[in-house]
Length: 429
Picture 1 (cartoon, rainbow, N blue to C red):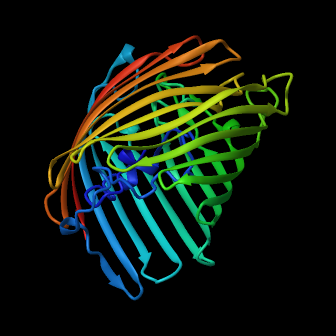
Picture 2: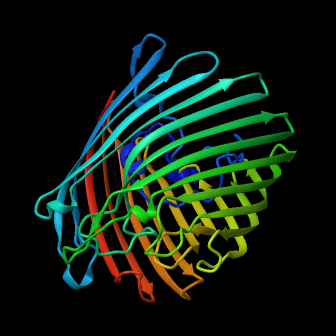
Picture 3: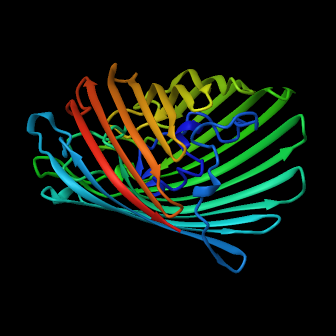
């Protein structure tokens, strides 16, 4: 959602490292190929504040934007285990640097960032996450654009992820190498977008609360994907699109002594994109998903309707309300389970309390359904945060949140909830 992505001058880079180093391994609700922003509205988080923009450092034809954020955080349930709750404080360091070309055509952007956390007492929770990425755009012509994005990252999974059994002493982490390509033809009233992607996941071992250790090699895999989207604009504010998606998961090893969970997924979707000046904008799509497992006698092929919808309501010049709805078929790595349905509703409210201060309140309800087991997990999350940009180079932020994970069935971990708070200071150039 635009109101969560935080692309405005005040929020750029505010959580650049942590946003990409703590993952749910869940595809976005709507593809970036959708013309979600048609240029008719500007959300609170996107609104430019040139007086507070980082100026950067010129290096030839590139602009460097370095940044360092330090934070102090608290969690009342470090190990996500309600039966043995342990609270702790930890400090975080998030170095970040971006180099962006300043050319009249084409663009290259290089980014490197880290997310380092050190706990006062529960040092097993320490983490050293990082990522390096390259984004390139080639302007072939006025109507044809090509993009090539590559990256490598060491990422820690969120305890609210569908693939993670809770109550881990050491958080699950993996190395991800990815290459993504996109070709866009914009004919004015119509647009065609094609994408291809390759993601490689290599997981580290994890340890449970009782000290036992388990290999995650069964999760190592290569994921290939491709999409093709055709969009037709009927008015400057309204368009319709159709999209086809296909993905392939190739796992390296057997899963718990059972056949590999190699599979191919398909999804077709039709939808509409709207952007009504001063009122609202959004994308709504309805589709059908199907996942076909090679080992059909072990894993159940799953199919059904999917939904992807997101929108921003511009309640006033100072307030933007964002809504996301999703029902998506997701490949998972739990024992004897091949896929699950991820259903979620998310609402956020961004309010410009001061010209240089934005306050955000958000909540999310999610239900993950596992058809092969007739089990599910309920997730509830709520958070309030504020971002205050004092000067071009100095910013402050604070947030507090509550999360709850409630499995309904065996093999999904224990229920837990967590209260977490953080204050941070960010220096940038």
